[in-house]
Length: 264
Image (cartoon, rainbow, N blue to C red):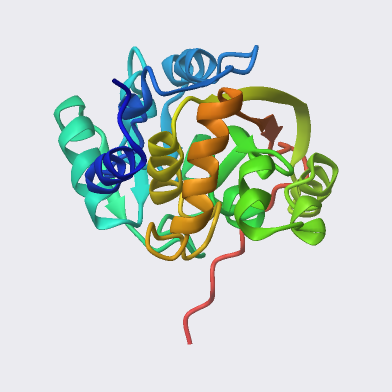
């Protein structure tokens, strides 16, 4: 006998959402993966870097999947549960986890890194990325693309025409260039997602809190119940995520160090 609505919701509402591991959804939801294989490509770049920074590392799970780290490996994170999780994963491998708010400035010197990486940043501080990159350095990242999972977002919030225009690759490329970076590669893919039960939806919305801001089971119980009945009647709820691969470099030419100040 399949679990009833209240059981599915209660199970998902009590599950831990610390870190950035989505293993709880195994067997309950699926998402196609981008063709470029971000973690594999990131790992290859880390092997040749000398000093690297992973921004908004979450629980460190993606970074920890890399084969090796450069001599200097730093990660930043703002959410305390994730900071503790990332520290436990990354410190044994020699990486330093820095607790810092999700706002500029980054707590590092100019030109400190030859590689900056990030998977699914909440916000992208292009000027700060350019500042901490060495001339010739690379920013390599996978961003959430426009209108990602909006079938689910708009199920709860209604039409979101303005939000649908956010995170557009052309706008991101323009912002990167304005910060002084050159776009080397940029690709976007739309990927099918399926949610097999309402508990998978509850878990995702608790973990990825910016999809439906202010989401709680109590506040959205009626919509969740209708979604539960829809899934039982019609099969999995289908949505689509969008992902954008970004590779940008800081030009060597035109880089100038500030002249030393003269003593008074």
